[in-house]
Amino acid sequence: WRCAVLAFSWSSAGKRIRYDADVRNNELAEPLLADLLDALKMQGLRVDIVTHSMGARLALGAVTQADGVVAGEVIFAAPDIGMEAFSAGLRAVMEHIGRLTIYASDDDAALALSRRFHRGVARIGREPAANYGNANVDVIDASDAHADAAGHEYYGLSYEVLADMSLVLAGVTAPDRLNPRGTAPPTLVRDTAYRLNVVA
Image (cartoon, rainbow, N blue to C red):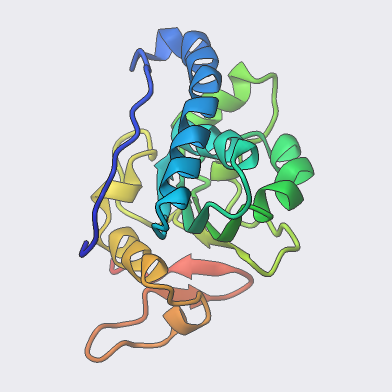
């Protein structure tokens, strides 16, 4: 990617048996990321955010704590965020960002486990048919994307996801990604919702 990249790392234990500790550490990192976003904004830098899994939860909390609009394009890949809380807070989130693109897969076993941990609350990363009623929120069905055994790491294992993400970061809208670009095929197809154009 032809821009500076900054990685924000939070203290995840990286183990399924420590998920509850990760939830707490994730929340503790929110004000730190919010401060970083405010500092980048004060420098006049254009910021886009790419997150995965619980990182999306961290970004969600941080952008709402930050001052004003702090990011343009925001990507949530396989986000581990509860549907109810997300829907309730979406308007507040969109006051701080330009556009949100969510990649979701109904084959994501890791998020199925997360749903059980959260007493049956659906995770937005496992709901590819969701419609949040906001023109600046696109949900992309990544269920067909190549992934790991748990169906959770497709964001980095699927050429089609990476190709589509690169267009998102370049500001290409979802309707425009339905069209070929030069000799490259469209990255999305549309039936009832946007879906990755995955080569079998």
